[in-house]
Length: 417
Image (tube, rainbow, N blue to C red; front, side):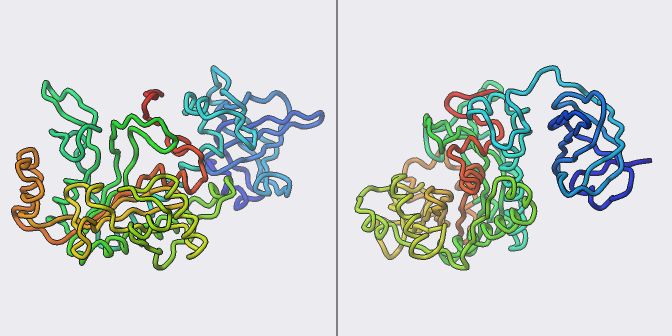
């Protein structure tokens, strides 16, 4: 039997008769000869044909002889082909998928995502995202972390109040989880080091190029830390693993988009929040988008780094479980990581003593009883972080809108497809 060969493997079969399969990417009809370009998951195959050809986006099998041709994609083509049509499209795509650049606006792409994302340039960011997740997992596995999977339906909206989606859970109120924060902290008491890759939900009424109602969060939490700097060191290793896997696994996607992944410094530069405020001339309890861009440019210029840690955020802007900085009253052992002008990661050291939580929560302990039970039985000093996958991918690819790095975005207006 002749088994299927992928386009990227054709050069290994020069002179042999093979079968390829995929979609008709383009037809080139000339006077004396025609070319059928077939697209599969690894690239394009050119077949030299005669006679009538199936239309674009038809699903086909092509059996032919692999022949060297420097002008063909990959330097080879199929000659003397036999074409079998497996399925024909009932509709034309919303735009020509064979054009090198995408001739459509973002709303058109999102409305027709199942077919629009077949375009190599629109598919490439998701190959980069997949490689990034693989690198995240590999890096943390190598550091002794255990992958966990936590509930996305929770009984109370306790982490940060109103920005949650309520649902009917068999006649009882419930909510979609904003993060796995409480669960991953509890699991530090079981595994010491844990991570999760999963969806999180934010009912924030923001209609911007950087906000989504659902996104993929790469979360990690580790015990027995000295302070937040140990967490930052692990984050650096995770980022290095992600970029390395993107280089290795998503090389064709990088080539398609003309991209080079960033270098992750051995030590990512860091400044304190108060220093950042002094440098930018503002005095607010959080960094504005303009400040994030200014600081990122400063880090690139002064340190040659596209990454910058900002540490010591005011306690007033951090969740109640954040550990305060013992040396700077009012400030925390929390940090953000800026990447190419945008906040990419939030993290820090957490409180770990039961009595500290009782003191912080005061009379508000009842909604947190399940969460506090882990601390009542002894927890080590710990901390963690969360990376937004879509933000990471959009920064890597230079996308102007995070929705370009989101398969099926969910935001203030979009609930389909």
